[in-house]
Image 1 (tube, helix red, strand yellow):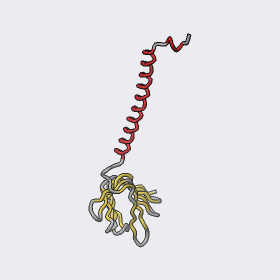
Image 2 (image 1 turned 180 degrees about the vertical axis):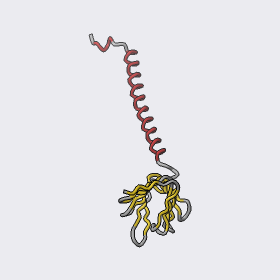
Image 3 (image 1 turned 90 degrees about the vertical axis):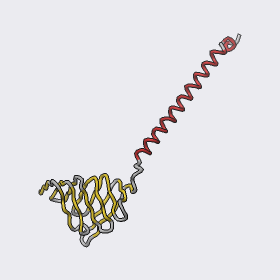
Image 4 (image 1 turned 30 degrees about the vertical axis):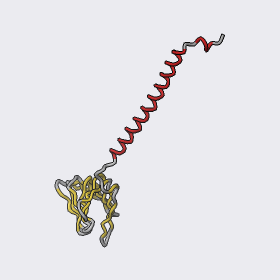
Length: 149
């Protein structure tokens, strides 16, 4: 006699339903996980950012100061609020801070956030700064710590 004729048909039916159900659960759980990843990725992209990774320069007669940041938002036609990892870099110095208002027309920059100025023999930690006269003059605000080597 054939072994398959003795197997209970209802047992095979329930076993098939359980197997198909497990397969569908695995597929839907993977789809839900992928949807959650897509939502997290889109949440990380800031919808309030006008410029991502902006790059500018202040040009004067003696040097060029390159400005980079992670985010930028237009305040008006000439002013841009630069945020996160803002760096001013020239051949002579660098300034690092988290928030700066940069004026493209006047080529000035102002910050009220903690700032770190570094040059070859000097380090200045301050509560803010103002770069004006096309980068020829820098004024540091608030409590400042100057270290001269």
